[in-house]
Structures are given as C-alpha cells and as structure tokens.
Image: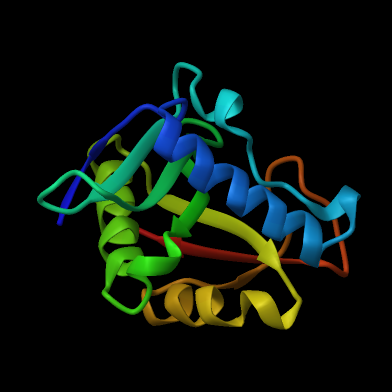
Length: 152
C-alpha cells in the first residue's frame, strides 16, 4: 500500500468521497453532517492523502485541516468497501498524524457521528490514542456528534 498526497477531484477519489457523503446523509440529520465535499478538500492548506495498492487502485483516504497554528482536524476518513479489514484506515490515520507532527501541530481532533454506523471508526480512533473531548473550532454541542482529540 502506498499513501501519498492526491487530488480529491480525481474521478475515483470523487466517487469514494461522494459515497462517504451519501452515507453521512443517510445516518445523520442534515445539520449534523460535517463531511467535506471534494471541492472543499481541494483548497490550499488541506492535506489530502490516499492509500492505493501497487496497481493504483484506490483503497482509502483521509485529510488534515488546520484549526490554528498548533491544532489540526482529521477529516474525510474513508476506506473503500473492497479494502475494509486490511488496515487501510490505520495506515491512513498514521500518515495523517505523522504529517500533523511534521507541520508542528500538537493536537489533532475530529468530529464523528453518534449512530451505531460510526462505532467501528470510533474504536479505531480510541485504539490510536484519541479520547473524548468537547466541541472544538466552530462545532457546538450536538446530540448527533461526538468529538475526539489526541495530543501529538
């Protein structure tokens, strides 16, 4: 598996992100969907990474946005359905956290849902040092959102 910066507007990536957004809209009320669309991930300052196999097939993605000089936010973590259970999310998460460290960030936080659909990703984050926290940045208390954070 190769993890590298990529274009969120590439056709295969766009399809994966649209699937991600569709799932978010199916599981959360509209006001509680905070996933970014491909265009919002393609702006300067957003680090967008993909994992691909040796043939170039897309396995998953993740992004890092800035929440200030020393804080980042993990966004758009998604593993392709055919690649689930192969460690893709763990590898992408590790690459995003490494990038945050290189950028001098001391904390990375994330927002995710509270529905059972989000239980597996939450277990991944907890296994990787994230802990529950309150809303951060522009987020507010929301019964459909849960917030996690970790220091680097």
